[in-house]
Image 1 (cartoon, rainbow, N blue to C red):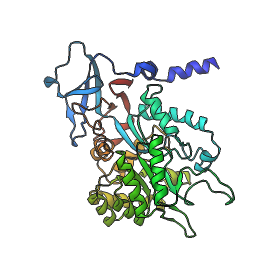
Image 2 (tube, one colour):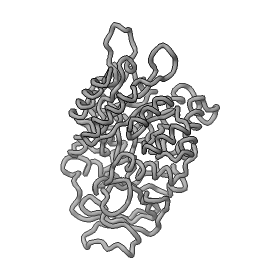
Image 3 (cartoon, rainbow, N blue to C red):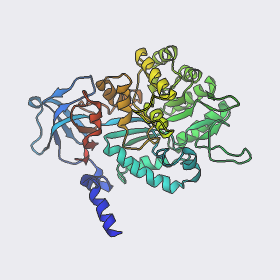
Image 4 (cartoon, rainbow, N blue to C red):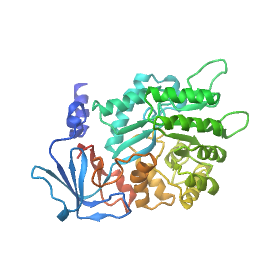
Length: 428
């Protein structure tokens, strides 16, 4: 037992143990000068050679050609040869309290896994996410784990455990009778969300979730319910609009899960900040979203993963209908000019493999620089995060270095060699 423990500790990056817990996670006193081969600022699609980045007191204080940046005498110089430095990436749609469905189906995770087990696993998922170069995650629902995401967020913020900066929604909000573990109708089974049945209940639940610590509000705007097959809208435009109005009073925003054309239209008209999944997107709906400044998070990787769990042998078999439809929808979204953020619905597939979404975005028609921007500055803009997402003075020193040039080969984002969050090094 002790030999296994010793081996496991050796496999953990040393700097995570040294700096990823307790008070050691505060920004270091000494400035840090980073000297990579290339810098991708995410302010445009360019790659800058010969640039350096100076970090002081947890923020970027200078970035530019080496000749233009003067570092303090006590600065620690870190060479990153052959590497591209980019802003810490932002996961736009995750579920830290879920793990891959080919390990345990969603129903069984919600119904049988104790909260303590799910929380313990989530702490490992948070660490894996950070070490994969994702320094922020918008986590869109605990799926039955109640308000545990608030505690996870706070544990990270208090330097108790390593992980990304968390934006949490707690339980998510579902329409009565439309979502949850399926079983005999006489039993009240776990739902995975919090039910509402009308406008007044929507207002009450939104206020409750904000009071419990939610940073955003998430609604399931459609789902498979009623006697007819397929997804159908669950909330009226009035109900969605009321959620938006209450959230705005607290300075918060609303995300809506919706795969139907009608559900997307209702959400966009009601003034939500983002629409998730969007399989039913049409040129008209995406034009409406663009007009109303609604961001789009397509979650390509979740559809891809679920198809493989169902038996699809990717690369050796034709794409199933679900993947074909997702590819076609993404092409329409790209052509529309709607703001497309990066978010893979990670948790459906393993935490730490977040880059799968970026690879599929490129496979489905984005350029590699566009995918990088979606995962950094565009996500920051869509999620109203003015202090991160790009490399420029004043921004949080959330920085990642990868081997190679991800503007030419997006898979380079898997080769993370250096991770800094708030000026603290977690991986080197």
